[in-house]
Image (tube, rainbow, N blue to C red; front, side, top):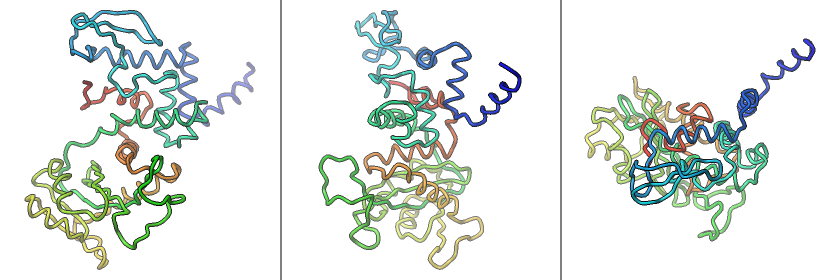
Length: 322
């Protein structure tokens, strides 16, 4: 290759996506995408390899199948591989998994990811929820210091359901009743000043004191200061839970009282509202998966497709495989 051609060639590297860069590096190393994914899967499994049936670690190699090493448990005789008992068990196209994890980190829609990978959209939809089943549980264990809490309401969506309990709405539509009603689903978000964030799908209709008791106490220090808006459920909950509470009256135009405000959690709400637009609606039954996905992106706890694949397999700081 001539020097001028080489300069033109390398000038295009900046336009490559992360998926294309990983594919190029694998090509230069002489390894196929299938080999890279299998090596990662086998590497994760070696850390805690045991029989999924009896948990015995007394096992031996038992041939290969679908590109993976199989094992046989000596006490119970069951055979298994590194994917048995994980969300990715029985899925095909392992060579595309790292590239698909990159699509998730890029917030690609089902159809966009399917087009990039050359698979059917149903495949990328299935992968989306398999990949997020464990990774979404990577959440803070507790909130400290000043914690802000606020609720977000979205219309209940039965997208994808075979039988609807109400007339269908086109492209989301509007609620039939004014204000917050049983047509809405409440998402409670609590966030401390270090950015640690927890979210809960509390149910349909207005947030209640009982729902706060179910969600927040296990996730908050006793000496935390809970800052909220003027919703009536928060003061009653804080009194009964023994948590310090301070409210800001947003309706009266009071947004900040010293260190007390809910601007951090409201900013998170704003990002959360805008983010799902390319997906053309999110089914209510899948809301926890999407909330976990948003947290992964917002907290940047998982920054590479390889890390997301490892998290899906259970290789994450506080996740354990059973």
